[in-house]
Image (cartoon, rainbow, N blue to C red; front, side, top):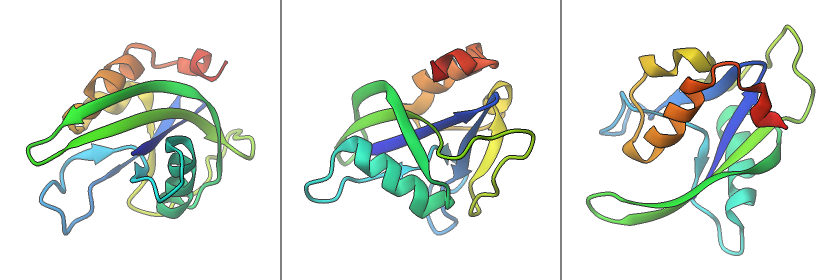
Length: 133
């Protein structure tokens, strides 16, 4: 799976799991499965556009891990991304249910276990513009 951790001006993109899912109250970053011949990075970028409507550029790999769920183990790469177009005082509108959240507010949301380590890191650095360097 390729996951886009999109950060701009102290905010990141998150969204709840789709309503028809059994995990509807769990939040996640945009991302999903790799298509045939696609890298994790390419999947993260594609999924971000498909799920949020926002074109992003990758900056660096934040974390690579495998996570065991009850029925399968997923190979995941979390890619730090930034919007293709500069963000100033106005953040680009996103396709619902995704939205911009202040990094310091991430503790209000319940994430999948595989995301918890990364979320804790983002919460610890709510003014994480240094992530973008």
